[in-house]
Length: 138
View 1 (cartoon, helix red, strand yellow):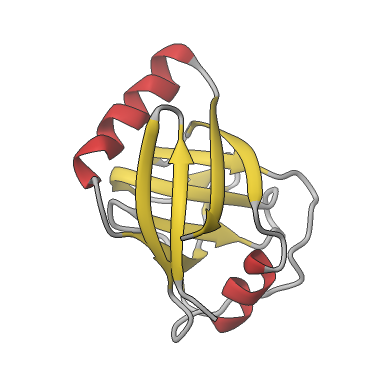
View 2: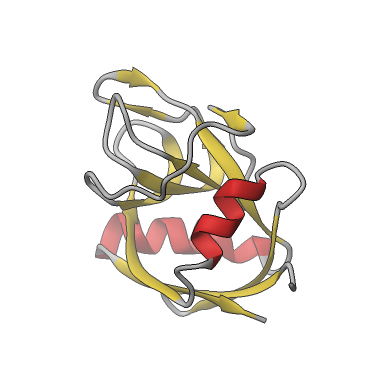
């Protein structure tokens, strides 16, 4: 079982890895849905990040290693509850929140290459709208 991923977001490509030791259930649930294809849009309340809104979709996981302050290049999965289910990628400073207040999500993927392109992705989503994203095995 490889932990290495390729993520294509907008015109950018990133290498990444699963954080299996810290979030084994979240990684397994996400991996079972790969390749995973969606769109990212700019966050509304959280700062410098993009997110995949998922409504009432359930990955069937609960909190594992949740944080409200992901570092640039970290993906977190909010399993739902107070707000809708979502996946968030920080590209700068983030305090994960929604209209109901501060939230926390499981850090389950970390980008390991081309970190300089993250702010470019964020600006692209902010000014030009939703960008395609694809997660696949490396």
